[in-house]
Image 1 (cartoon, one colour):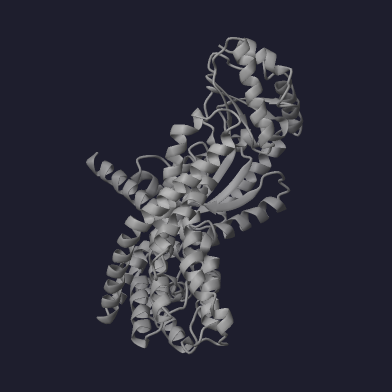
Image 2: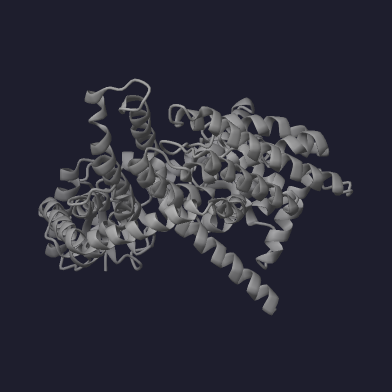
Length: 601
């Protein structure tokens, strides 16, 4: 029992670490394009660049000191509290930017989420107290005042602390590099990558430090610690020659995608299948970083994704041979170590990638004290898919690996003739719980995905390129559509009857609040409808609160009666399952209002 509790605790700790790392990474990932733009301008047009141009080079410092920190803070604020948090976070970060001659990436990662959190807490206290018609006045002035206060706080308090911390970190990194100990960092980085912390480590920690180092010396080796494609290439090459079964057959395609596409996640299942291969990844990473350090090379900006193409595009003039040498050394060393491990393993079934994936999922499920994930059990029943309206692939960053998985399944769904079920991809941090959602994610990230979307159906895979479960999904969806050719027609008739009679089916005893939302509607109409409905209730002597809200601010509870237009009803029901809904043709005047007012408590 104690062992089981310890395993669950470890799983929870790993989930928390992943979540924290992802929160850092999620502020950087959407802004990778701005980092690439800055890196290209620097590499090409600076005084020592390929085509020096003094006029264009004037863009370098403003982008580094203002644009990128503002973008990071904006995204950080939006993560916490949507657009209001984003704007306040961007205002707040100006306090740490002004008066500093270093890029305030760390300050942006602090002030952005802080601005969003402060605005969210402020709204929770005061927003419901605002009189109808004054919402816009409150929104503008409250965010403006909050931004002003936080900008001043950042200027006098956060700025000095971040500058001191940045100087300390920079000196520490310089010292580690000077004594040639930086390669030892890969002892921790390579296992962290395989546990799907690669984006957190790379974009959340190494990229911000690398940008500051690059800004001062023109390049940084820190950009290569996680992005080096050499270790993964070596492991996959070893599987191509010494692997067995499906692992050997799939390794060539995986190597191309990993090395040229930059999607490192594709080789993680191969390492997880044979845990001893983590030694090969570590050996390759350490040797590659040692070579980069010995040759004194680095990149101008982040190489994302970690493709050899992206790495070469970010390489400073005159450093191409050094970079290619470091990547080659990492690939050769990891190949040799992986080959020795694979040749020494005499078992017959360890080369079967799909078999090991299934076995691994069972072990992970057992360690969490439960059976296989509910989604896997659900795949055994066609009826479990009857409510699926949308399929989402979710990974840590929501980009490379999940996009590939979504593309594979989208093609299968299309070929099967299944319509009206979109297949998309996103990051786990941006998942939203809603009705009719099927979430497909890596087994290592399944805990976090289930926490974000408890109402959704879940399928966990170890490799987004493994199509076994995709075939099950398509088969069940296809079978469901063929069970009863008249099913869709019957459902449509049923919904029509429900719409005509939805007022009489309301549970008025449970209703504690009436809400008008202005999603997909004119804000003015919803605001006016709120005021008119309040007047109706007042004249009837009823005291039920009436609010004008955004769709994202609703609580999913039967205590809420939400009145929307028919156009907005579908969007609302996709997001919420418990709230009571009435759709009307005209928000300002509807025949249903008299019945509602009469029956409200």
